[in-house]
Length: 303
Image (cartoon, rainbow, N blue to C red; front, side, top):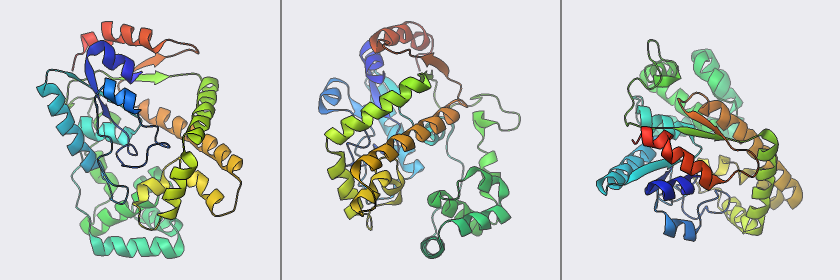
């Protein structure tokens, strides 16, 4: 869909995806092919090594540079992807928070290593119940960050985030009352049945294109990679195969189920954005849909 819109509008694509930023991780992340990249210029792909922690702030800096570059050449920036937090940070800005504190982070990491993430979640629930309610008990990275902010500032991260609520419900704020860029947003949707079938076919294609070898490399290097690739849907579901705990087909089925859950979660998040919903029925022509968007939505909102 993004490629079709870029063709119609003479634009370039900025990838808004927390996994596509990593080099070498290509199959499970469904990066655009070399042919697609040759046809339409893409930005924010392959800009970090998987061993490096890549933050939301890192993405915002990279995306802002890409948008400036695209606009400097008189072209349209088309943001495409599924990481809602990245969209939110780019369009609203980042809330002001303290930097990482290595010693505190090491202590929290050690606690998670020894006891698991559940004790961290219970600790956060006692100190900042609003933040704990929004963070899954197994989301180690976000739990550690929330506790780190609380320890450093004495202030719950949920209170700081309310100051950054924007279109997500800040008191007295309307949808994108202060957007950082003029924009038009479209949320592409399909029926649940078609999504399940498309996910199944996507997993089968990835398996045929080298998913096992890529996931095996991630598994073999898990002790030195940053947490994001290890927690991402696409790899962790396959780890039981490499540790001899499940067969390959079973792991692929787990991947299908996890991807379906991810899609439902993305849908929930993106319903909070001021976006026009574009429903694509089975067999819809993306080129025709792109023509309609180019003639209406993006023509009226050319930002």
